[in-house]
Structure formats: structure tokens, C-alpha cells
Length: 212
Image 1 (cartoon, rainbow, N blue to C red):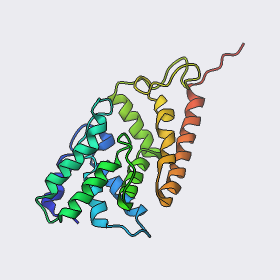
Image 2 (image 1 turned 135 degrees about the vertical axis):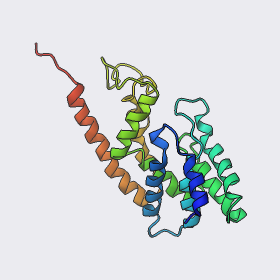
Image 3 (image 1 turned 30 degrees about the horizontal axis):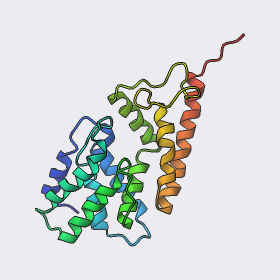
Image 4 (image 1 turned 180 degrees about the vertical axis):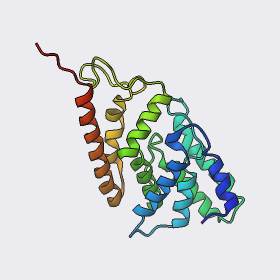
């Protein structure tokens, strides 16, 4: 799909120490986009290029500028693609899809390509890979796994910057409700079920009841 020169250039932007948004994340999202596009009238050139470029600018989760990441990625994508065989309309469409993909930007999808990339990116934050990403992200943010005395936030406010477990209630368990496509929603239900199974198992491992 891409010329080797462009692919190598794109891949170089994902050579960093954030496993949640590295090259393997991009490949998974691109594969999910292909899967979710089956049966849809989709511009695959726009969708695939958007998938590969959507996280080309990586801003840490705990940065005050995190919400600007998708806009910066869209601008960078336009700059890169201007050197290759993309029409002006294609470049603008790709930039818009990238801009709209971000959860934190909270923008409504304006095309089927945008709907699919939004879904694929959210789905990669769910399920088994979602648990791995959740753990690594919490570690990078120097969060504790959970509040020792009140892990499930029954008598305190949620604080996912200090306690990684809180991130499930703050965001992860809500991702499924924000999926667009039918195929995305079906896959989302499977991955959400895994989340609940993981949390149920975790509860048995960290909850200690003293015998009176």
C-alpha cells in the first residue's frame, strides 16, 4: 500500500518508549480497521493511511496538552503526505479522520472512515491488550495499582492519576458505549466481557476478609 520510503518514515515516529502507542498498536488498529470495514462503502486508501498516521504525534497521557495530540498528528500527516502521491482531497480527508479519532478530543465522526478509526482505536484499549496497555500506562504515570484501603472507591472519589484501577470506572468500562459501527459494538461486547472477568478475578485476589 505504501512506498517503502513513506512506510519507513511513518514507522520512525513510533520508535519511542510508550508501548500503548507504538508500532504494534498501529498495526493492530490498522488490522481492526480492515476488519470493521467489511461490508461498508469505505475509502480504504484514506482509512488505511489514517490508521497508520493517527498517533504519529505522541503526547503523554498525564500531559496538560494531551487533548492536542490528534490535531498535531493531523497537521503532521498533511505535511508528510504532501510529498507523496495523494490528492489534496485525500490529504484533507485523512487529516480530518485523524483529528476526529481521539477519545480526549471528543469529536463526532464526520465520515464512515472516521467512525471506523474511532472504533478500532477504542477497541485496542479494551480486552486482553487493553489490560496490558492499562498496566503499562499506569506504570509510566507512576500510579499505584489500587487504593489499599478502598480499591473499588466505595467511600472516596475516583482518581485514576493516583490509582490505576480507578481508570476502569473513569474510562475503560465506558468505551463500549461510544462505539459507532455494528461490527465494532459486537467486538466491543466481547472485550468488555473480558474486562469484567479480569476485574472479578482481581477482586478475589485483593479482597481480604478477616475471620472474627
